[in-house]
Each structure stands twice: as structure tokens, then as C-alpha cells.
Length: 201
Ligand SMILES: [Zn+2]
Image (cartoon, rainbow, N blue to C red; front, side, top):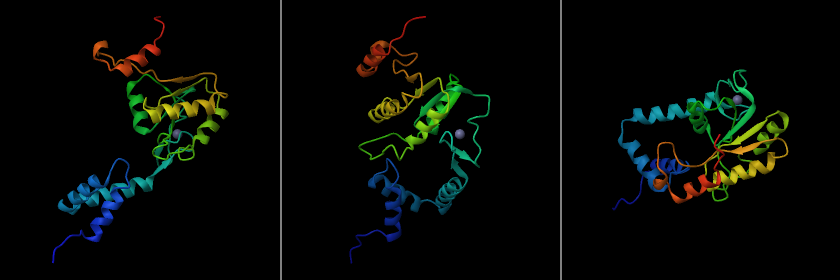
């Protein structure tokens, strides 16, 4: 008899993996077969990391970032409370921290609004952000989402919701990377950098 099926357990694993963002059926199948091929130690390690992270990581009630053991330093006193920076996720927050150019508060959206992916304002708890801006006396809110269509849409949406509660709402500048040249910059970036030009001071 010809064998033309995978073991049910592998099919179930492929189904589970394909629920992750950015992983289609082909990648999920490849990952599942890879895990089957490798010693079980690797699978155990991955499974254990997921369970342990899910058990100990929570979301901060204030800044919506992932925190360990309910501890968040968002209001540690050493940070500027006049300014709030809205980012897509914790990785973006860390990148901004590494730049050492910002010392204000953060709000982590944990995603971007997306019509194509079906992500709506409720999924990102935008109401929580609006309530925070209403309650606190921020002098500026920086919208630091990516310059992609979902990132722009999200920034625009948030701007509409908070514009009456904060005197200054800014968007991160988009332009020519430091160290690169004008003639190597793509058309869209160059156009945007001309729109966002600033006065030389
Ligand atoms: Zn926090």
C-alpha cells in the first residue's frame, strides 16, 4: 500500500506552527519536520521556554509593555514624565533606548492596526492609551510606528483619538540614513525627507 499521509501528530504540529504570524503552511511543515529530525532536547527546550515565558511574563497596566514578575520601571522617577513615545512592540522600544536619544515614557501597542490582517483598535487596547493621555499631563506624544501603510494608518488613527488631549503630537522623522548618500536613497524616502525638512539651527 502506498503511504501518502503524515502522522496525525505531525499534522497537528504543522497546524499549530502555521498559526504563528509570518509562518505559512510550507514553513510550518519545514519546521515540524526539522524538529522531528533533531534530538528531542531541542523540542523540549523550545516548549519549556514558551511555557516559562507565558507563566512569568505579564503586561504592565500602565505602559502595556511585557514585564517580568509584575515589575515595570516605567515610572521609576529617573525618566521624563512630560513626553510619551508610542511604539509598536518591545523590540522597537529597546532600539530607541539603545539610541540613547530619548528618556521619556513609553506606550507599547503590541502590534499595528491592519485592515488586511484584521487587527482593530480593540485588539491593541487603543482606549487604554487614550485614557492614559487624557489622565496624564504629557506635553508631547511621539508616534514612532513604522513608516509602512499599517504603521502610518495606526499613527493617523491614534492622532485623531488623542489630538484634543495633548498640546503637541509628533511623528518620527523619515529620511536619509546617517552616512548614506542622496543619490543612493530611494525615491519615496527622498520625497518624504523633503516634506519633513527642518530649519537649520
Ligand atoms: Zn510599565
